[in-house]
Image 1 (spheres, rainbow, N blue to C red):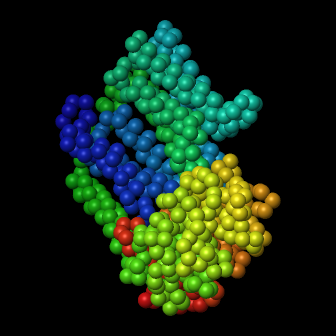
Image 2: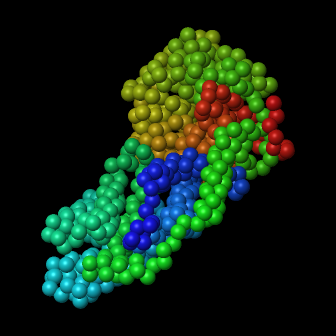
Amino acid sequence: MPTDHECHWSAPIALVWTGFLLLGIPLISLWTAPALVHQLVAKTGQPPTLELQFRTTGTLFGMLVIAALIFPLWVRPMFGLRMRMLLYTLLAESIVLCIVWIMDPIDRWFWTEASNLTFFSAVVLVLCATGAAVNLFAQRIWEPHNRLLHGLWAVFSAAFLLAAADEYFRIHERLGPYLKVAHGQDLITAGYAVGALGAVAAACWALRQGVFHWKNHLPRLLVAGVLALGSAMLLDTFDFVLAPWIGANASKYWCNSIEETLEFTAASLFCCATWVGVVEGKEGCILKLAKQMQPQLRPMRFAQAAYLLLCLCLLGGLAWLRIHYDRIDHVLLYQKDNYTIQVFADTDDGLDQPDGLTYNADYGLIVCNEGTGDLLVFDAEGNGKVFIEAQTGLSSPEDVAVYGEGFFVSDDANHRILNYPSPELRPVVVEATELLSPEGLALDAQNRLYVADEKLSLIYRLDGAIQTTIVSAEDGLKSPEEIVLDSAGNLYISDEAAHAIFRATPSGTVDAFATANDGLINPEGISLHQGWLYVTDSSTGSVFRFDMEGKVELLMCFSPKYQNLAGIAFDEMGRLYLVASNPDSKDATIFQVSLNSRSTGELKN
């Protein structure tokens, strides 16, 4: 046993533990979180919102970190006082994060600065300032002539108090508008980031001057904390740069969540650093005293065995949950009521990457079959046939809008819209400019055609030779998919990239009718029926229903095998049709759901 009473790990054990902490825990969290989310959906009936996914992933990550930190603290102890202080700091941080991720109110959870995490960060920063003040008074006693060291600790104490005040009272948010420049708040946080880099430079200078010694833990912890804080400030400053790439809502959730967590981590590291500074002061006299008074503990075999068993149970349970999630063979994870649901058509009926659905009383259910480039049609009994062949000029049909005997078809790959006067006649290319990726189609009462262009982020209205832009990226549109018109002329647009449903009124007003806060992640299919707006989500396999005031209900949530939902349509009997695909194979199914009838909830073939 080493003479300093510290129990050091062997290199293999330390390497395995560090690798698990840095790589294993994030991978396990990301791998198993979807299964936990779907279990919560099945038990609670709540939509699998971005918030629920972040909360679940974060809480699972924090709990795994707690389990991993128990190992070096109690199971195979590492008795260095300074290292234990750091590990206990990380343990306390993980516990606080789990509490916040679980208990934060929905309207101000951890991606906003109104979160309870902000309060904990402010408290920790006050502890930092207290630790710096203790160092200042102690150094004035131990080294009364070292004014440089006294000045550094005074600056640290003042800086931590200022940071605590800014964190709690959000001073940078209040001062931002007074700058009267674009991104004024971001300029202030950029200034904080510059200050953090300046602190790193000052620490390096202090090391060169011999004020601190790199062999001590204090400068290492200070640099680590400054780097964490600087990363948070840079992320807060430039989060708007990521918004066009990953969407405004995803940017808000990801960037702000990581930023708040990094700020709390930085505060925790600073707190540990200041009190480690007290321990290391006066040539480590307190550290030496603590080592002399500390009993020489040894690893307990029983504790190691119990911990190993618990970890195996935890990891085994998570693995079983994920494997079970991947092998789920029933159709629904959740349904609001016991609806009658049955397979209407599948790959044996010719389905190959089906997308848009359109129902017409004369023709039946029209299916855009992207894999073959054909249009299929099914009667009420589920008997299908090729309605329009790809040889007529189709390559990638996306949606169909029927008028009388004719119909329009959007062709994504060929960047055009075809007009079929009837199924027997050759189509005519609709005259339109700047079509790049036509997706959803809709016709109003005057037979004017509305077109959603996914890649141009535009909604056009075609009235003969007149082409008018109705909605554009300036209105928040990013990647429009399907569109539908109500009887009042309001246009509803599903937008995957914006995680929203937009509504454009006849007067030209555009607003977000539904957003990620309602559970939308990748809304795609959209349909109106009896005053309700029905929406499918291709990311979570959810079917939502909105009233005209925007109140949301989760009708059903499909299992992973069917979660890639696309087109949605109603027939004249009020039966709902859904396109569902397996994201891991080419299997595709069209389900028929009778919302007005009740059954045992079992699938009927």
